[in-house]
Image (tube, rainbow, N blue to C red):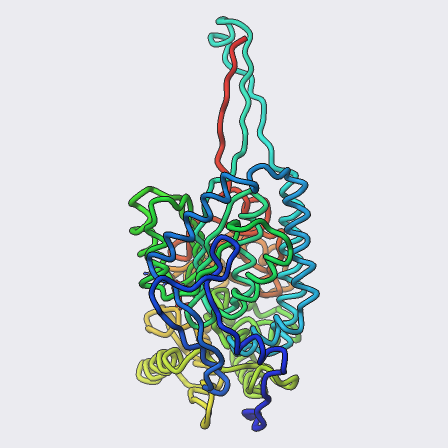
Length: 502
Ligand code: ADP
């Protein structure tokens, strides 16, 4: 394991994007913020300043919401669902046509390895847009037979219409910035809503680039507005705005609770995709050739800065030592370095502050009596790199096993029980319930455990299977509602029942 020594510099195309003046996208125009707020965007792999971006304040949020409302009532509302399908599809085409630049900007801004960015943008982002492009033409209501008493009044007809909820405020985090933006835009546009999107202050670049693609795709002005800005100012103003109909939020549980309070003012609809502390449960009959890469990547994908990360590994005592040793060997073998390089498995953490937070948890782990098997240190030199860290012999009373760390720290504990419910109870001892996985060759154990794990999604013999069609979201303090799939469209729609008496 080594930090890649040589630093690559941005391509001329990326440099030219980075160096331009970055404004706010409101009503189809790139405009200056009402007050001169600026965000310095830092490359987490080199600590160099990448760009300076205009930051939105409350007045800009208000302007953007007005533009979104006007667009919602205007040309956009008169398009047919078939026309919306074509526009969303066109956005997917634009994204794919600009894949190299989108990938490079994502890697520079977030730090993730190039292969991860390219795969996620092309295979997931493009397909996600196309999946929801297809839904636009399949949104419709029902006709409902009414009770005999009602029918006695004469012939009548009752039907429902599915209408777009209106103006959506989308607030997203920094861990997969471009994909997060697409996850919010695609269902909103398919439903016929308009959007004000606030990317995370750490990673505004690909959202701004997406704004350019939205314009090139011919999506009407004001349908998508993009406002980089800080959470406490722009984010809070959007969450509280009286003319926003729904907030779609992905981020920490702590901020999710603030969103709920802010949204209470006008009772806007809220969906929340929050933190996790997902269990991975390995039974003694499991195929270790699949378990080791599966759980190691499940824990350390995106440097563990991933809400679905499998951060609590429960291993049957018969195979505990072997699994710990092999997971640690694989983690130690990961190549850590600047994501622009081809030969890198793990990039940096997002910021110095984030790495300090994670190192605080490592100290807590050392002091709690858990065994530090590997990692536990930052890498020297520039960039917010950190070695993947594994603690064994953790218990659910320890802070590192209870709290979401959002970094490359895996806790491993053993179980001896053959009583599946007891194993599940231990896996469920968490305030979170987002993801989880079960590893076994026994099909009935797999399905029974999957049913007992209290999470929004559970995988058997893999971890965190995601697909545009698979509902995604959390139980307990991992969130409200589901994204992806048909269910992911619902929060963007409202039902109107209409009765006609002939
Ligand atoms: P993370 O822990 O992943 O940084 P956060 O929950 O802090 O996640 O941030 C996720 C998003 O929420 C970011 O876009 C951030 O700017 C925004 N945000 C932070 N605080 C608030 C707030 N009080 N109101 C609305 N949005 C906020």
